[in-house]
Amino acid sequence: MQKTFHKLFKIIDFKKEYQQKSSGLNYLQLHALEKIYKEKSMKTLEISKVLNISPSTLIGVLDELESQELIMRQRQLEDKRVVLVTTTIKGEVIVKKHFEEDRLFLENLLKKLNEEEKTNLEDLLDKMTEGLTEFETLFN
View 1 (cartoon, rainbow, N blue to C red):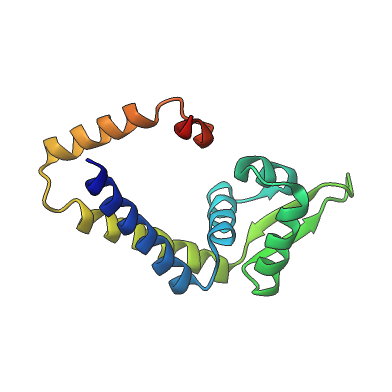
View 2: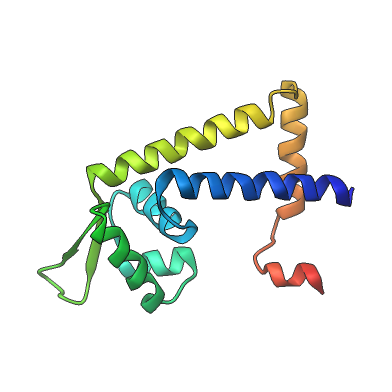
C-alpha cells in the first residue's frame, strides 16, 4: 500500500511542477488566481481566509500577480480599507489553461478505470479525507 501511495504522490508532485512551469506561477499564486477567477471578484480579506494565509503573505502574492497583469485591485469608494480583486483577461487565460490541464491530467490518470471504479475511487477518497482539516494530525 505504501509503495502505491508513493507512486501517487510522485504523480501529484509532477502535476504540480508541470503546472507551475506551464503557468509561470508558483502554487500559491496559481491557487489565489484560480479562487479569484471562480468568485469573479473577492475582497483581499476573503482571499487570505480562503487560502489560509496571513494578509501580509497575500499582499506579496497579489503584488506579483498584479505586476504580471493577471489581476486588478480596486479600492472601494465607500470604504477605502476594502480592496476588491478581479482577474484580467490575461489572468483568465492562465486559469482556463490550468483547468484544461487538470481535466486532461485526470482523464489520462483514470483512463484505465471504468465508470463504476471511478465512482468507487471517488467515494473512497471522500471517505478518507472527510473531516480532515488539520493535516498535522495525520502524523500523530
